[in-house]
Image (tube, rainbow, N blue to C red; front, side):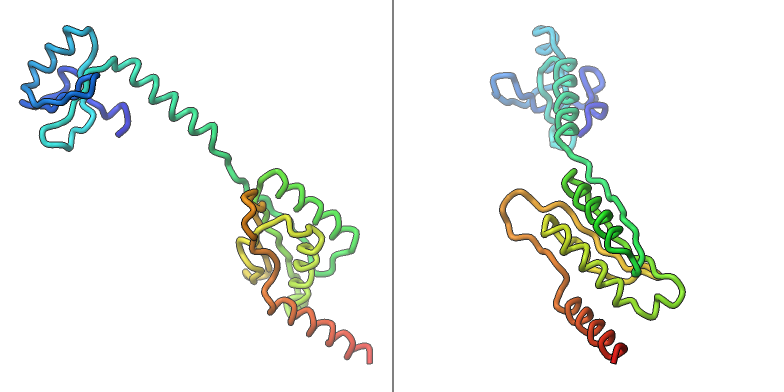
Amino acid sequence: MADKDLRINEQIRVREVRLIREDGEQGIMPIQEALALAREQGVDLVEVAPQANPPVVKILDYGKFKFENEKKVRDSKKKQKLLKLKEIRMQPKIDDHDLDFKSKHVKEFLAEGNKVKVTVRFRGRELAHTELGLVVLKDVLARIEGDYVMDKQPAMEGRFMSMVLSPKAKTGKPAKTGIPPSGAQVKQEVQEGQSDAQN
């Protein structure tokens, strides 16, 4: 329950409460008695479990309690690392140098701890040869040398073929890398098709 939802002192409008003292001792008593105990100690009566029957209250310094809870939330937010999704776009007829350059960027993004979406964009008649896009994506994977985990296998989305990679975990678990055998088969078919065309 968020701090702002906690009722304190006179805001607690029930007849009986289960009081948990600082030493951990518990007991059911009228609300007025619990409030008197809190006032005696110069601290607050805070309702910590309103859904219980009777509601559970604690005697504590509400300002200090609120500060410590906010500090815990801030610390947990600091520890969380936000993953960004970066995208690298290319075309099926990409030059070798450009492919090297883009692969280097993919590697850098992964090293920074970001996810990377690698996309091949097809224009016009290139859509008839989507297997060339798969070859390009496979080339990228070969150039980044296994420093990744495959989140999403290469797939067509309209005029685009894309895959999503994320940084390899540092736990030593074997990572899912590479394209399934179907990708290798496509590449082989492309090479066979090229050799037929040359003959």
